[in-house]
Length: 209
Image 1 (tube, helix red, strand yellow):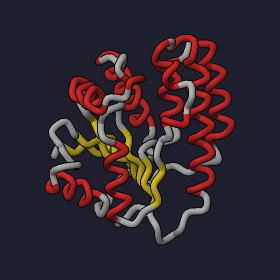
Image 2 (cartoon, rainbow, N blue to C red):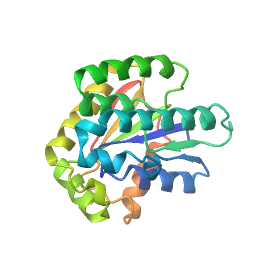
Image 3 (cartoon, rainbow, N blue to C red):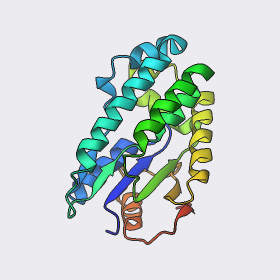
């Protein structure tokens, strides 16, 4: 494969973690996963978002920073890294979840630490219709996610798209995954695997399977 640091992104319920796990297993890679269960504020945030928005975002920021700093700075040149997030998602969720004053403070802290972290060599963005993503969220049954709305997912997807349009020096692959089942369908998964061997230009590449 052509890339040593691959990030999988998308809104909640798109299968980011499942794809990162399959890639890591099949390509003998290191795996970086969001540690939702380690964030004590997350269930509280979904109950009272205005009260717990700032602590939940700061907790995620610290966890993502320490994970990337410890695992990627010491990466094995012969072992690829697969992650189910980009560090910059911290800023996108904060913009969506925090008040104006809270976001201004958060952004200052984010800028201080982000310069020391590497960007992925390629990012797969799993585009999925919010209605389908919400169905997936309901199916997996995490109690604290059951209040997520289609409007929230739609706003989040807009945040991602706007961000990636500005990252002209990144390789970002927009994949319409609304009709893909890469967990159960080998043909769909093999198609995504083939993308790891393709040379992509910087900027956004749109792929409709």
